[in-house]
Image 1: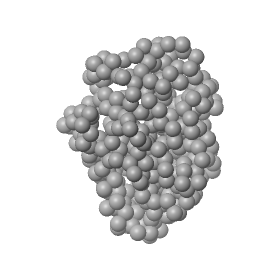
Image 2: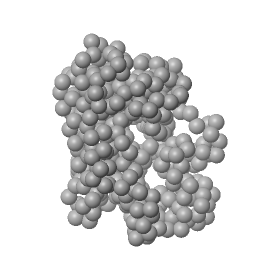
Image 3: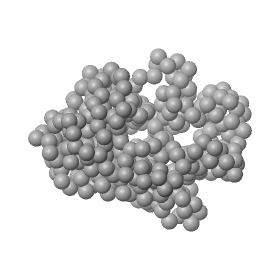
Image 4: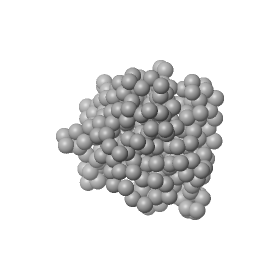
Length: 324
């Protein structure tokens, strides 16, 4: 296949590009700041049509991951950049598909599991899940991420309406856990290694996650199954409370203790690190109903086994690549 990955220079894009490349597929990533890679990297501005658009003509799959990181303070300037980077890049990809003589047969469009409500009582799936924004026990500042996710999906659906011959899947992804340096698992493991990997806040908030091998397998599954379109949750089927999540990660690493962080400590730390506590304290209880009903099985459905595998691969980076 020819696979084009706009915004493919980040952690998730690199995981996918690396896996497809190793499997012998033609991979092209689109990036504002292209660097060296074993696959082709093409420059784009993520807003306007240009030479990059020709890469989508004749491609089999486009996986749009473009969007500014939300790991920042939600200042007015950053809010504008976060929202516009998602809307404009999605619109640009949709327009390139519309103009293509041979449009891709499938468009996998990044979304986020953050679109669901902050809740403890029941899991959110694609059918019965509650979209967030008005939870009484969630800070008003958390509504921004819901608004972004909703606007992002709306832009994708509007673009899809102009491209009826290209199947679109909205990837409501949980945190992808891989041993790559700089990724979310690397950050969490660093806390554990330095004895700081205790519960965050009261530890009740659910953590939704997906092992990188299952993430890659799920992406391939979505490409191959023409009956799947619209929102699909990419998350392991067993989310768990933060306190238990961190306990199992400590056990996988062999760390007997981890200092907890209270909410006020997290607020100070987030301010110092120029990020938001929502990334840690929001309860994301998400399950992959549509994937499982379609027949997909997870190699790592439970966090304890996933954490042991990830720790072993972190210790031995030569085992890091994931094959499709």
